[in-house]
Amino acid sequence: MANGTLRASSQRLKTAVHRSNASLTEGMLERLFTFAFKGLVYPQIWEDPDVDMRALKLAPHSRMITIASGGCNVLSYLTADPQEIIAVDLNRAHVALTRLKLAAAQKLPGYESFYRFFGEADEKANVGAYERFLRDEIDADTRSYWEGRDLAGWGRKRITLFSRDLYHHGLLGYFIGVGHFIAKLYGIDPAHMVKTRSLDEQRSFFDTALAPLFDKRLVRWATSKKMSLYGLGIPPAQYEALAGGGDMAGVLRARLEKLACDFPMSENYFAWQAFSRGYAPGGSTRTVSTGPAGPLPPYLRAEHFDAIRDRADRVSVVNRSFTERLAEEDGASLDAYVLLDAQDWMTDAQLNAVWSEITRTARPGARVVFRTAAEPSLLPGRVADETLDRWDYHEAESLELGRQDRSSIYGGFHLYSFKG
Image (cartoon, rainbow, N blue to C red; front, side):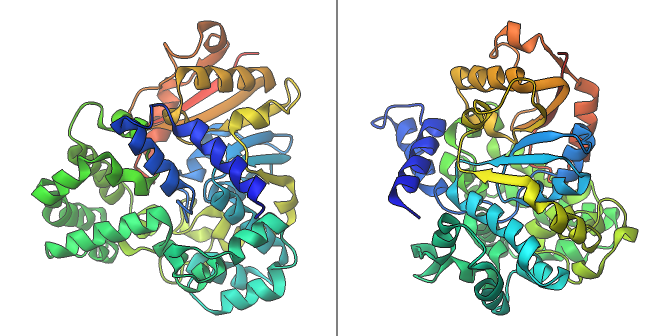
């Protein structure tokens, strides 16, 4: 990847995260987060795309913009058949991963090879498939990223992650791995959760094995440090919002309780990732008969593969901020916006800038969804009244959709629609 591209990507991330002087403790923490966030963070995105699609009501005419993250959501939204998806991300690794997924959907021989690449992501054959089918089909920056080397891989090319279990890597993969290691120090194997056969058994395992871990001195000490949640992609400012002035160990216990107890394991691929560090064995053989939740992200389910392959060229992926990319759009030209949890990072000035562009580019009836670490929407009192007054907040629907979100790590899910 060209040095100019790297510098631009780094500067955008600094602008998003850095709020304090580097000489202050908070400023140093922000710069450590920026350093960590330059690499791969999310091998799998941790927002539920099925919930997003229920909220957004995408139609064949819909033009939408979303933060890419691991790209699972971007490809999953294609199952709703929108006209166009603009994907943006400040992290060049996420841009490269999303572009690779799109190229793979179009260029790999079929569903089996696609699932092996991204569903299992742990076979040497995937590297061979990259060399044969993808290397010459991707852009130069994406190829440079995947053929580059970094210290985390002991000098191996990044593309070899797909032969070494992608989901054990990235900041999130390492964070989950550390959580498993600490649990095992106390004699608990979180993977036993995926052996449960009912919600009652899930509840029993959580109450007797997992919940007591959050009272351990080591866990309470570790989670009291802001750096402890960098593996979840949570910068210092978002840590404060998540804690809400309370005990972080207690907050994390409550979020894990929802993940462990509110949805059957047979329907929650987020729980499989958290407790077994991968998808359910045999997931690729499941079909639509398993129900709309299913054991896999929508983009990895066999019944959606042909549609995703046909529609992949509707997606553009850029290493830009949300506000930057919106500034390039005409007025009243977009129908759907997905901000993930990015607003938790923003200053008031940044919030007003992005909502000014959202309002300018929104068509009547356009919908915006986002998540927050804390439960309430963070917009009232921070975004100018003259902007926010043009939007309806769907409070009851937001609460219900938040309850349906299987990823379970956020405090709030929020849906706004444009009055026009």
